[in-house]
Length: 531
Image 1 (cartoon, one colour):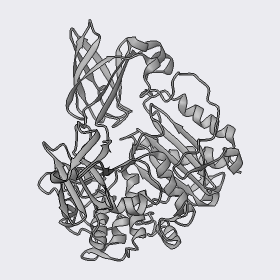
Image 2: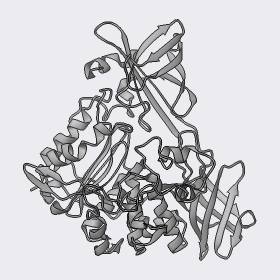
Image 3: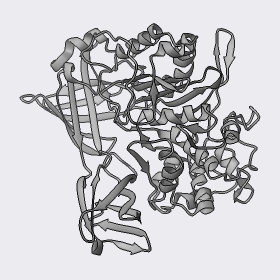
Image 4: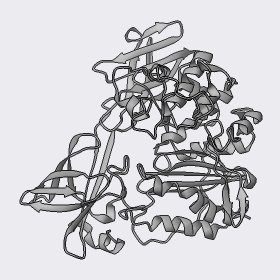
């Protein structure tokens, strides 16, 4: 294991990085004439050539509002839709600004020596955490070639080969996460913002209240809402002092806390900032429940045979779909890697019934996505439009990116990208009985019903697309419900304390690390800080 002292001593001798963007090519100001668009009543669509992107929307007065759809990229496996407004710019002409989700790759490589003199290499990939933060490599140089090999006995053996240019001190290798050749160049550790939680290293953090912006948030010092500011400052400092190359390091990207409706802590790490959207992974599944409540879709509505919306929301459909079983035909990775059926709604609908609905819990992203099929069938709306109407606009979201299936229907199995401040709003809305800043998101009844355990604990402990994990502190147990996702994406709500917490992080593939934060950070630090 590389200690922090070793890493700091290595500087340019042992740290390399690549930070590159593969696209999308279409970005910035766009001008569109009427003859290039397809009109159907108020509906408006156009497609750019060579699969560069497309737009779908509708005219409202003189303005055309809708979504820009960018195609999948090198590091982005799905297409994404983001709101775009086109305003009149002359006769039969409209203009807008396309701001796509960056198709970005960042990789860091640190090489040091063990006490026996052998070389050890550690890779960090903030966006995907490939090959996993626990994985370190033996480094063997043979002239202009370098081999990275996992030590014998590893559960997941892996080998990487690189060409080494001794004059430029660069490594050139094919990066397996997205199968592209990258060149890692010497990196000064003092400027490795995407690797270290905070730069410069060793600086001390002083608590400060978040700024009040025009996004609906009211802010306050933590002390004004009964939270110990010194405790929160120590927590942020602990995160800032993290050695990101430790095998079990918490690779935190943001930490936000709201109490009594006020945002009181907002901190970002590893090069992330307030305006940066973050992948919510499976925490985005909870939006399925919110939309069901917003449109008053009956959870007893049947979707396939006796399988109901409620079964899908609680992962108890009984279909052959289990994300924790690599051999399950409905497994999310299996579904998304196959190309025979691009309609993922139909793919899950075609899976056989293995258990009677409601009798067996199996975590199923494809089943949660099937809630989108039920919502579309009930409302006739495209899922990104429904999300925008029922969630994003009432909650005052800033920029966000909704991930799509190959058919360009919205995917509800997780993966919406948004800023953490906006994710936290959902928790406060539910604490307020379903309202945010005067806007009703869901009814008070649905806010309670969906966050109440729906099943016997022998079957599963979920509400309707909310996970429920009571937190015990000093012999006292607090009711809790949460949205969570791979890597450490959390929206944690503690109603008794009128408290909501958001984490975003990069510990993908490392559930043993991020799964502990509910108890170790919220339970052992934040709740005890409340008065």
